[in-house]
Length: 241
Image (cartoon, rainbow, N blue to C red; front, side, top):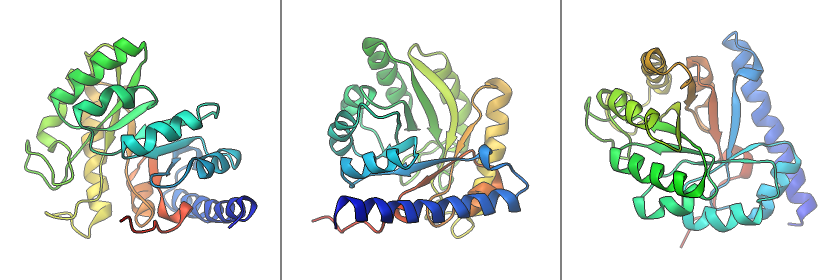
């Protein structure tokens, strides 16, 4: 498919997602401006990122550094905020800090320490969302990363007190196990409750990232400020390898 065809396809998909977000906001009695769309561009080429930017997208997300770093470099002239949403190993932090404006998957103290060190070294301020595992015990860890609800306060205080980092809020992925399976809206409402508690100590940490292509309506209904949409904008990813 040529670039003009691809751009037209992306524009049509974006318009559909935009309609869904607008309808969900209206149903929830929220203003459309209260919800920010983050397009998850993982596995897709820099050309798609460029086309999305031309179509007005301002936030993109990646989940693997080896895929994201060269793409971000190729698109460094674009007015984009880059979000890192994947599980982050400490040995990748230096590279990720080079391009990510926000890391949405902060879930352990060792990661916070490393992020802080590299952000200071790079002279950058990196926004951090605590990834909350709603399938975990109160202070355990989730199957797909994340800190249990009982670990939020301590980790949030650590981020807030770390040079080079800014505590922006919370993120979750609808869990595949545990009490919230198939109950996305209940899961997202739980995240909102946890956000309310976090904001008592850290009023500026008001970002709530939840909801993807399949469940963005439930996330908007619950009160999410950011939704992360990949497939509905870019299409179904080719199976890798």
